[in-house]
Image (cartoon, rainbow, N blue to C red; front, side):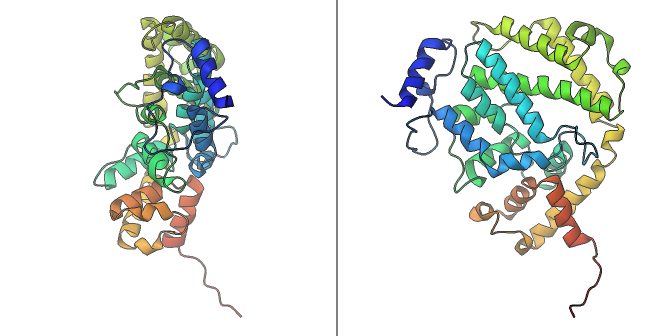
Length: 335
């Protein structure tokens, strides 16, 4: 018996009846030889973890563009926090940790440089619009590797529906959806305090009193509430009071940090940079590095090529590219 089969049998005997067993996966978009050692969801996790798109997350904005301090979150550290919270809840609920981790590690692969500012810029200039969760699906299905990563349908569904109104069809996907919110609400509060955008005394009293006065205590309260409410249930749930408190903190962040705060003073520059590069590449596609991004050129849709190219850039790389094309450099003579 292969090690993978032993792991699949272990899932059957130990996981909840509501868990998504790897043996019951709906499969992949194209045929794939099963691994002798890893389950299908472990394979997905590893494919995402070893992808170029995952590595690029370390140089992509979470909230604060090009912060001077080393201690602010990036899109990568956010992703790792989401994965850890999701795994903790999945383990406690006897759900499939590997599936939850794979979804969490892949959920933000389609994010643009400069975070949501970049997302807004591409959404405004492309004729088909832009959403980072849909772009994440393009990354893992078309752009990464030779012809995409060929992930399971469960992982694709969790990535696609980690944001927005649609609910993932697996409980593991639902866990990632809420783990994402738990992570960014709490780490963005911490980063905003570090950046002196807000003070701890500014935090709304009622939700802080209910959830906790520190980041760790708030995460602990939220995670425990979900575990207690969701055990042996067909969907992931929260108590009304806890959910309301979490949403109040989220609304506070939108009002005080995400919109019209000093943290956003550079966003118009980031949007202008992306907009100018988009039109430049649209008119001069030869300026895109086709050897590095060969998968971009599988489509005849030039708008899509340019969008994929820019969305894949890191913060530092897009600044370098912008300087090459729009900032004059000193004249030099080779002697």
